[in-house]
Amino acid sequence: MNYLNFTPTEWAVLFNAVDSLKIVDIAEKSRLPYNTVQNVIRRLRNKIRIGFVPDYWKMGLVPIAAIFQGKMRIKNVPFYTTTVRKLYGTRTYTLVTGIVPEKYLDEYFSEFPCDPIVEIKALETKYWTPKARLTVFLPKLNIIAPKFWDSEIFKLALEKTRFEKPSRVKLDKIDVIIVVWKIKYAFIKLAEIARKYHDT
Image 1: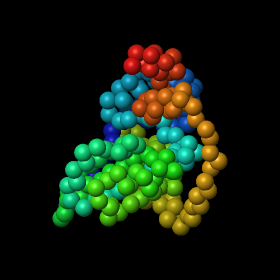
Image 2: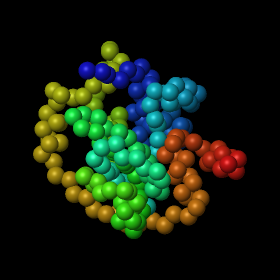
Image 3: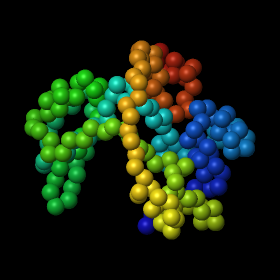
Image 4: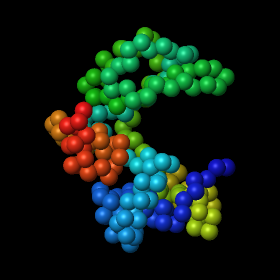
């Protein structure tokens, strides 16, 4: 099994980055100097993606995934598509993922040359975080490992989750620009976003 290797300082930064909006927040929570946190994040960005995960449903967007039979050639990739990948096993498939406005879902799938064999519309998206209940950092080994031995895994298996659609929010052009840049890098400053947008 391959494990992710991090130093205790890197782990402290990662752990506290989960619910922080600014680098200064991470520094306060981890009790590390601001410059240290900044340098650690710069180093970590070469290993992992540190991005902001918005509430897509709240913005009227639906994360989707579709699997098509064989190697499908898509001449014009539909708007809202995020990835197109080939899957190889006993057979070959094409995986398409996207984040699509709810009102355009039917129109989006009609853009493909054939119907998918599997179509998934996500109610919500879950990503691993350093604060995940089945994750533990082992400082003597500098690795992150799953808690296979913990009774928490059985509690999680028995838990029932209920999804409730959140109330929608209206985004203007500026909101969308900020969200897009924050997805790429969670701690980018608004002044830097403005500068990058002005340069494009």
